[in-house]
Image (cartoon, rainbow, N blue to C red):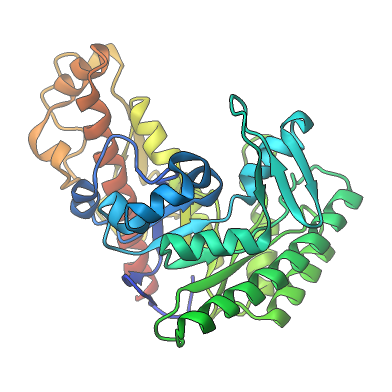
Length: 369
């Protein structure tokens, strides 16, 4: 388990660790508002620079007072740089743009406008958004990419991180922010499936110096199994007092496994996407010690769309204290889902996020004995 600080102190409040950060990619967790998030026990959100610079656009965000005021969320926000999204867009279809040592130039599908994202520009945007944790732009690859591609990625990621840090320090000096006022800056460790490259990347980034790090690249193999060995190695390469974010990890079992490896931070759209698709998470035990035990079935899925729930008067979970479980039955949720009412998405999202918050609360209990 993570044995660093129990809390990250950030400009917009403290973040208890371990923590799951829901993805509010475009400035919103789909179908729910900030009051819903607070009632679920959410402490922080992840928003995405790549998407936000397109919609609603950086000048609009500034005009609306920054991400916190725009979204009505007064608590910490981590802004992902967009490295993974650039990988998804450009590396998988070259017609959308090009990547070079300077940064990325891309034209999203359906857009007539070209966007230019450099390490410096990414930091400038994140700083202007008012983020609490900024992430350096990185050159993301897939674990199955060739060794030559991985080597280029590591070299570029380290170079971009160095440039990001220089721009970050320049802006902090310009604003006259000391260590207690400024946001945190995380770098991303790339290297694909090569232990040597992961080590090279981590050591180079540690030499530059950052407040924390993220595990870079897709954390699952081609069969959607967690890359435990590579995640474990990367955690070993970073001193345990520094937080390491398991980027893109959101399956409950994977969150628990990464917490066991020493990761204190996680984010993913999976729990909220599953909710909208009528797959709810429920605990099968009240004992935190059962979580992650070999062979223990400590959680299960409830498929709301199944016909067996048509007349089910029970809540999704008797172990959940969310607004959905407190007031509504599975039968009613089944009805809302079948008529495609937006209330279903809200209630289901509230439930799955509350489950994730309860999960991290239990992980804290385990960590503290």
